Image 1: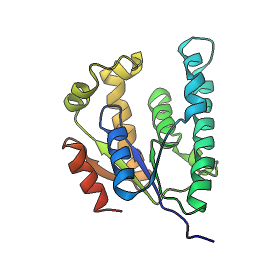
Image 2: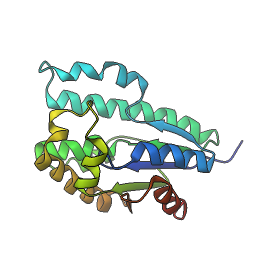
Image 3: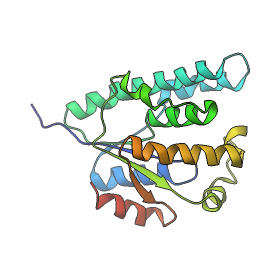
Image 4: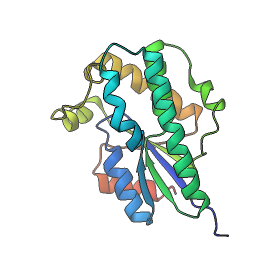
Length: 185
């Protein structure tokens, strides 16, 4: 049986460079790149653009997506593959905390998600983040709300402590960010 693979997660707000860094890190490590919520979830998440479903249903939907990604990543890691994942179950927990004002981090203990070897939180100022995402049309209303996004940022900072994430300054070039992450893996 082969050795178990390594599993790295890249977290952060939209516009900090998660996808670019995750893909470049996977290339640098010769790892598989994966993203959350996963293809199956992405194909139907437009259903939550209507008012038919509650915020709780949307939250559970994304946790379900995290569970399917966890299963996939777990199988890959068990077979010896290294994986770099763009977002994980931390994102729905962080956003749920921001929406409700409640501590949902304890829910992480309820589920048996694949445990990452390291979690990197990419941080960039609001100005840098906005400059990077101004031309994106896929952001929803809450993601364009500066006050809400500041609440999400604060929740991510709490998650850094709660889940022992490594905070990385993502204001630099993606190549520099990848170099910094590589020093820590």
